[in-house]
Length: 257
Image (cartoon, rainbow, N blue to C red; front, side, top):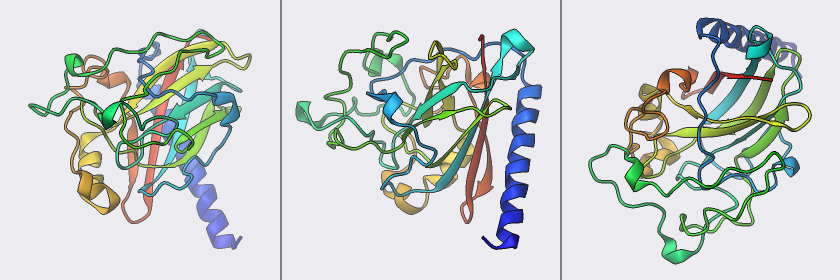
């Protein structure tokens, strides 16, 4: 690796850590809101240990840095926590699901605002071993049941930070753009299931270009989304970067460990 590029990466990593620490300090030391898993959780997350979760998907490069902070330890970073994330691709499609029940994903949009009545009921919560009934079978037209893109598991470092390399997620009817996250302690005990929202000024810019353009703008705002409408302040990520060089998402999650 050339020295110039190495120094740039060091600077980027240092800036990312500073941003996450500032984000954690700016928010109150209160537990992050619980969010439903949705209909597309990873079937076997323990087999999806990966830092780069892009696979064959195409889209705007997105580095994801999530800090896990322990409320029971003055909101200090939680080392060796297990962080599972999953999100849809640029077309709003998830891996591991789809291809049945006539190819209907969700009811068509009406007023452009999300409504919990338009969404399928949330799946029953799993136990700490992640044993759940099959979900999401008929909610997606495309068959990605044998694919595993945009899903991954990482351990937090000594500062409580887990990092992923991904692409900017797309959207699907009835939901604002989002990332799912399930947090466990080092022993595998479930601490929190939550979701991460995106600043709308950034999604508007991304969805107007490249592979996102044909799919258009999201039909549901953060305030119209049934998950985020009453808790967006604690679930909204910080986004930096640009379309030329890719984006960085930073987000602080607070748990009781």
